[in-house]
Structures are given as C-alpha cells and as structure tokens.
Length: 379
Image (cartoon, rainbow, N blue to C red; front, side):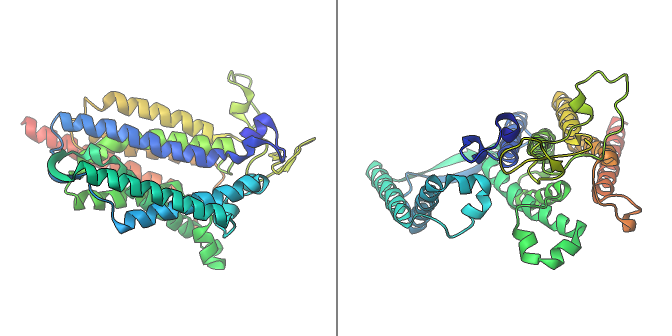
C-alpha cells in the first residue's frame, strides 16, 4: 500500500512499514478492546462474578524481572543500532535482520545497562514506599491481556498446523523452514487454535466459557475484517480468481470489481512499467479483490452482532452461534471466487469451505438447542 502510494526507492522511509503486520497487530488490539467492553458489560449484568484475589502492591522485583528487562534492553540496543546503520537492509527484508545475529554489540550492552539501571531505581522506589497486600475483586475483563496472549499463541500454532495439513508436500520438503517461516497462515486454523487454547485457559481459570464466547463474537468478526485489510493492502496472495468482464450495471469503482494489486508483496504477475524498487509487479489480467468483499461483510456482520448483543444476553451461546453461522456462510461463498487448493478427499471442496460448512451446521444446531430449551421453559 505504501509502495503504491509513494513509490519504492532505497531512501523511501515508508518502506519500513509493513502493512500486513501492522494491520494484524491492529486486528488483535481491536478484538481485545471489543472483548474488554463486552466482558465488562456482562459482568455488570451478572453473567460473571468477581474472584477475590490477593494482590501485592509495590512488590519487589525478582531476579527474573532484572534478567528479562536487561535482555530486552540489550535487544533494543543491539538491533536498533544495526537497523539505524543499515536501514535499506531492514526495508528490504525485516525478518532476515530481526531474526539474525546481526547487531551492534556496544549499543546492546549499553541498552542492557540502561534498562537494568532503570529497574534497579524502580525497585528502590518500591521498597521505600513499602510493600503491602490487599484483596481485590478480579473480573474476566481485568484478564483481557492474558486472554489475548493465549489466543495469539494458540492461534499462531493452529494457523501453522492447518497450513501444514493443507500443504503437506511443502512441509515435508522443508519441515523447520515451513513451520518457522513468516509465510503460510490458515485463518480457520488460527480461529480453531485460538478457540481451543482460550477454552482450556478459561476452564483452568474457572471462568464461565459460554458467556465468554458470546463476549468475543463481535471482536472476532471485526478483527477478521481488520486482518483482511492487511491482506488487501499488502497484496499477500489472498485474492480472487481472474475477474469476469465488468457488467454494464456495475456502479461502484472499477477496482472493486477487478484489481491488479500493483507492487504486491509476493511479487506475483508481470512487471510494472517505469517502476523503481523491490516490488514492481502487478496482476495481468486483474482479479476479484476478495479481501475487499470480506472486509465489507465482516464489518456488516460485526454491526449486526453488536446490535443484537444486549437482546441475546439472556440466551447464553446464541450470539456466538450466530457468529458461527454468519462466518461460515460468508467464507463458504467467498471461496467460490478465491484462489485456493481443492481436495478430492473433501469432495472437491477447499479446506476453508469444509470448515465453513461445519461452522454453519454447528451454529444452527446450537441455535436449535437454545430454541428448544426456551420452548421447554415457556411450557
């Protein structure tokens, strides 16, 4: 996106911004924020109860705190100094710089000393203020950072595992390289992995699972739309098949019907005329910009679920069941015009289509059980 707006050149400062990673981070933050708001609201209406927890105020720092922050300061100095001196290398391939042993040792040592010294000062301030313990009521919305951390870690593992299942040949040709590479992420694998990880964590923390699932429904679909913005702006290959001829009745901009993804990050297609820089290809012929369609549908579904959330609060599970249905229907039909691998073992369906059908069936079955239970209560 930045390359297309401003052009690409070795001295272009915008080259250091990677739209896909930026928007994935914003997707996580948007989901966490919406989850916080919903968990807090549901606590206020009595769906969650507080857990009295002993909290230590002004707790002294541990050796681990010093070690962690010292290493963090070292990393910032070690990598930051090298990046400042080799900005063009960072612009070209951040992963190879951040994940290598390249760095500035002197600035790394100074960074470690600065961070360690700062936290030594913080520790002295805490000791002077005095350590005390008190009991605080902790609700689930106070644990959003923990929930998000569990979701991200288990989601990344799930995304990779499902990619391996979808593309076993690539994995077995280079197992370590495929698993630890920045490429190859299956969104449904991330959703399922994050779901399983969070459910296990919620049970461990004795937090009611079903109300928590309802609370996260809006955040999941909205963050999905934000993540798809990253796919579109970076041109990561999650686009559609070659677009058919634009019909006469089409009233939206041409690029909503067919888009050529200029300067796409995977460098797919034909060379762009008069292009300078690293990413200089575009798709010929143009394809359906399916991320745009998914962004629109995700935000529309999010608005519907948000408008229904209070009305469905007395029906635990209903909001999340609706999310499953909407998500499955959206993804099933978008797969018809997306570039994807089909599997004969799944009856010619893609992996995403197969999982989407499961989502719809599970969601409808769950709604049916809720409806049947309500009828019994009414009698």
